[in-house]
Amino acid sequence: MPAAASPDLASLIAEEAAMLPEEQQSSVLDYVLFIKQQHTKKEDADAVWERTLSDPRPSSKLRAFMQAALAEGSEPLDLSRL
Image 1 (cartoon, rainbow, N blue to C red):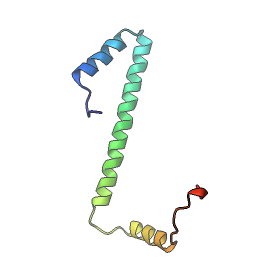
Image 2 (image 1 turned 180 degrees about the vertical axis):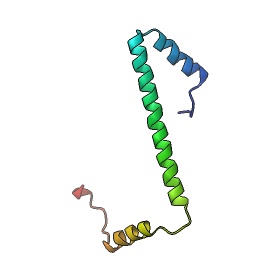
Image 3 (image 1 turned 90 degrees about the horizontal axis):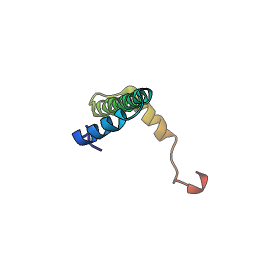
Image 4 (image 1 turned 120 degrees about the vertical axis):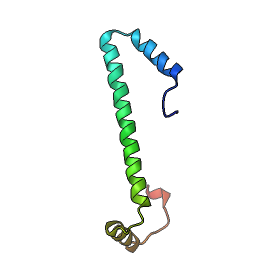
């Protein structure tokens, strides 16, 4: 899916929404704004993780988590236990 809607797609959405009663047009707008907000939150979350993982400075909390996870040991995945 493109980062931004094409003019044709945006026009089609606007034309279809214009044929709805005003209350439903408002609902369509609310839904579009909700989707936009969710997309923005995901982009923000992805950016935070990217910065965190790219940061060259040592992270004591991450290091402690990794050491604890490694200390637990591991075993092969047993699909019958899922």
